[in-house]
Image 1: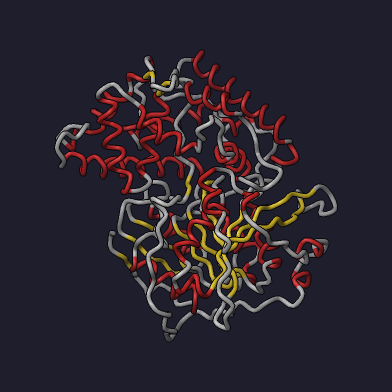
Image 2 (image 1 turned 60 degrees about the horizontal axis):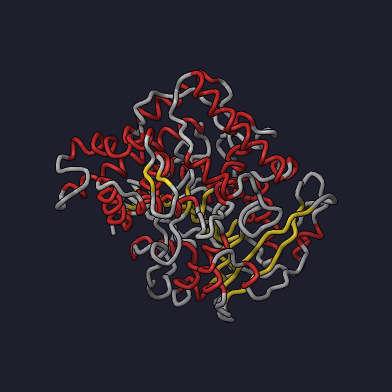
Amino acid sequence: MRATLRRRPLRRRGSTLIATALGAAAVVLAGCAQVVPGVAVPDPAASAPPGLERFYGQQLAWGPCAPFAATEEDRQIYADPALQCARMEVPLDYAQPDGRTGSIAVLRHAAPASPQRLGSLVLNPGGPGASGIQTAAYLSTSLAQTEVGRRFDVVGFDPRGVGESEPAIRCLEGPERDADRRDDDTDASPAGVAQTEAEERGTVDRCAQRTGVDVLANVGTRDVARDMDVLRATLGDAQLTYLGYSYGTRIGSTYAEEFPRNVRAMILDGALDPDQDPTVELIEQGRGFQGAFDAFARDCTTRPNCPLGQDPAQTTAVYQQLTRPLIDAPLPLPDGRVLSYGDAQQGTINALYVEAYWPRLNRALTELRAGRGSQLMTLADEYYERNPDGTYASSQDAFEAIRCVDDPRVTDPAQSLARAQAYNQAAPFLDSGRGASAARDSCAFWPVPPTSQPHIPQVPGLAPPLVVSTTGDPATPYQAGVELARALNGSLLTKIGDEHTAVFQNSPCVDDIATRYLIDGTPAPPGATCPAT
């Protein structure tokens, strides 16, 4: 399996998703954007597009979240009585609202009853394919005693096809995903390309059979944004307050274009440039991960016994020497599995999302140098969300399905080869040394056409969003945030650092600006910059 860099989840779970205690209530400053308080909608169906009144007017039946728990870790935190869950009905195809429907899983942590309550803060953690209800559960715990938690219900939803929403996207079962991860796709010969493309076609066929072509045709961001407007109405909010991380910024910009006057406030953190060609985006992301690897390596070389040596100029070459032998000889593990070359790459990529994981990567590479691979495999398993029983969350399946209907696809083998060559140049630490492959990915064989194209959103009447971009973000490079802020006429907050996303993740400077914006619409000042944390 070829390493994938395009999955952009928010750092999550207790060890890495951290909200800093925020200060007192923000002060309303002169020149702020006008923000309408979260006024309840007397008749939510009144804001519905024609034919969708029954969806906009539905009442959510809130109850315990235990039935929505996908893992033991989820079961523990979902037992919190402050969390409530419900299902929201949406059309599978908005062009046929009387046809088949889907069920969207929703979770909320309600703010205390108070005249100061401003409505709901809806969030998405990225991916595509990451669970919004999981992230809302973890983040709301940290936010509960902050000004944001006291003024907003914190709400997360699993986008259509994702997590606990139904119907779910299912492509590969656990043993099939394990086999896919073991597979070597570095052979760039015509025979190797043919084998890789046959495997990609097989995965597409399984997606179509197990999920349904009608579902795959309607899982793109276009439809997620429409679901989010239904959610806004069912929550009783006249306008949406939204926090989107990573791929969640694409949901946000899509929503802003479809429903610009329905936006109260919108924070977009770890941005995707909506007008960027996906191939250019991929290459830029590869360059971003090379930068993150170089930052990790520089830190490593200052420490005793660095597994990459002591010369910063040689760290990429040393990493290649450690990992490339796995192509021909995957490393046996105590549990009977093997660490493949792809898994070594993916475990490394996972650790590069957040600086707090650098010590884990150091230990994992030290172990690999000694001929053991369990720690790198654990990092890879976390990335793929593999459970101890060998099953997987649906995130990787959803990632493939959503990106294949969101982006223009590459069907020309020559273009695929050029993309692979450019990628190897942008991220040499991930270059197998076997040459670039012309193999096309699964999207080239997808059974339904894309439902969106890169473009600059048209957003008349949009309340200016706050865009947060981190200088050394490995997954969504800084310039994409600059472009998104320009496209949406928003303010830009620059965060210095090498991590992916920043809001409510242990930066008091970022959190203070985000809080002021959410509560009273204060934009980031021109040139606003927060230091590394």
